[in-house]
Image 1 (cartoon, each protein chain N blue to C red):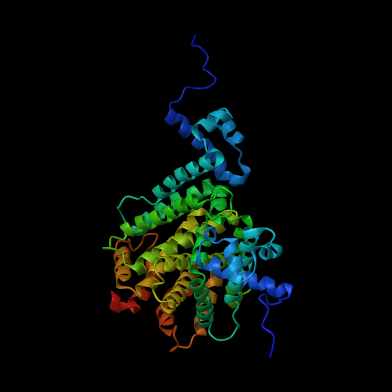
Image 2 (cartoon, each protein chain N blue to C red):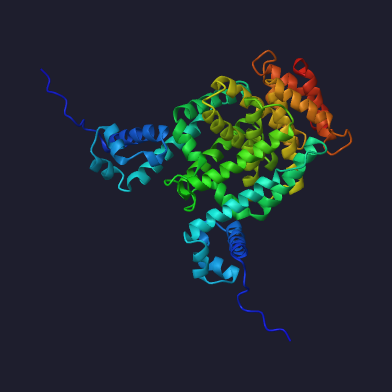
Length: 239
Length: 239
């Protein structure tokens, strides 16, 4: 007979830290940070409160920031997509991962972005802003242009703001429409936004032309491309 | 000979309160709230620190919230536009006022929306969210449709998020491009966003058609209308 497992499994420092962070992340994902206590984190991880303090001497604030940093890393990875296949399909895959993240961290995501929580500091603000910037850089790198100019850059960042706003409304509206429909709609908004900028900016016009050239005519974005192309045709001197 | 004016002009309670708020607003507009002290507000208003406390017993926090409430009222009024003339001209005028506000309150606007300031609470978050909602209602009321459906509503709110994001980047980029160019670009983004949604939503398609029908062909948005109309033609079954 093997001996009974000890009440506390022996974990390495790194493993224990990950376990505590995961427990914290789960709690912070579904409730506003005000409503999560350190005792609950300890209980969810199956450890004592002093043990949580040993790893996070700064208490809930430190734990929240570490959990946010970990969530931010995950979120940034959503937009890290292989450079293969049509651009809008890549964007769709990134949005699928992003919307799954929003779905999974719903209440925490809303609380964080709506602001005003006691645990928000200039550090948490910087983490959130870092995710926005990283997402923009990922997208710009997929557009395979040279150094992106200010208009293209602002267009991408405007779209990221719109996606963020749409995510909050989506959570507020009980996750309607379904994630797949919202994803397609957001991709269409991206194309429409680029097309509007293309009329003002040659670099953006080049990006739109290159992106649509890679799309299969009968693919899921073919219909959109057919709707959008006449607009580009009219701004034909740019193309 | 008239006697010299007293050092403290006698003001009514309401006048004094307004004067203090105005001094606070000017200071909060150009610096992060962390960097503004109550002594500076008193000095800017030409009164003593105890007098500031008499009107705002909650100190800086209360003064900040009152200043924010006052700025929020001003911001909401930006989008309150007479229901006359072409829709996109009305939107341009509202954006002119909005961008003038952003220009005037630059540092305070950035600090507030980037979050993480010590003076931000669930109350300040609610004030900011109230402005977003009011702006959306103003815009929807101009679209002269019946009760706006979820797609039209989300499109308008996505655009408001995009405008907010663009404003922050604009301030970050040293207010480039010039406000008038940014304004026209944002109007074009609005039309592009509505056009993209129009393909999914009959109500939005009707709004786009009605809006463009009201535009003078040779007016400032005529070129945009000419670019956009072929797209609507392509989604003709909706129109």
